[in-house]
Image (cartoon, rainbow, N blue to C red):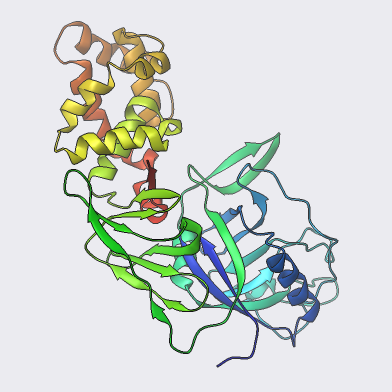
Length: 369
């Protein structure tokens, strides 16, 4: 068993464990562990994700504000440690001695980040992911965008969903861990739910390569269990649907097409899930959606012109041009189709699936009440 310190980081995509190298980078390791020990990383996010490069986080909170940090530390990059895939290093500015709390994981070999000389000092490697590199790989492939937050532009920012760090703690594996366990129950319509006795942040949850769910009670005394008979997980403080290839996916697609991504809120999701779990078709649920005050309020009215603009914007992210507006509005005005039928068709478009990002939702789970 390794005598090096280890830290387990629990994310909305699942947990991973890193081993630290205090012999080579003592100041950097001590700095990182000081943030871990005072629970600094709880509620932060990965705010920079670059495919085939790095995933970076540990500084910005879920309100998209950077947290106040301790004083910056001296750079320890000339240690012989190399930026290979899975290694963990401290992020910094152009000032070599500016690292505070932010860290990044190399998703490929990035030896160009190694120490080269006093004028090209590189970045300080201080650990390596020894378990859960598959979680890093999933984060690496998250959908990103260039966004502006409080007037500052950020590139490669995970969007439309945040990738949260639920917590970071020192880790020591138990010699004979207990298998994580759940109680299996069904909802009113027979949908299987795995029920756990603790809060969501007490568990690491990730999708496996064969799309089953791996759940681990954190703390080092438990080993993961694979949940095969349920696609919904229930904790003492929240419920999450992972059947994004089923009713949860239908719900997310419909909500976005009708109301936009901002409406993917637990109470609205619950209504959609309930209807689809009852066995109702997309057309019947859509017919209900277009009659809601929320839909008409967000669309700006119940008229056909407002309907086309709202749905097209929700699905594609932009308003229709004059030709497209005239095409779909004309179909509605002439009675060739209904708002319900057109919304149902829009919900199933690939463009809508791309906007919703079902893969990203499947990794974090769709929250409901």
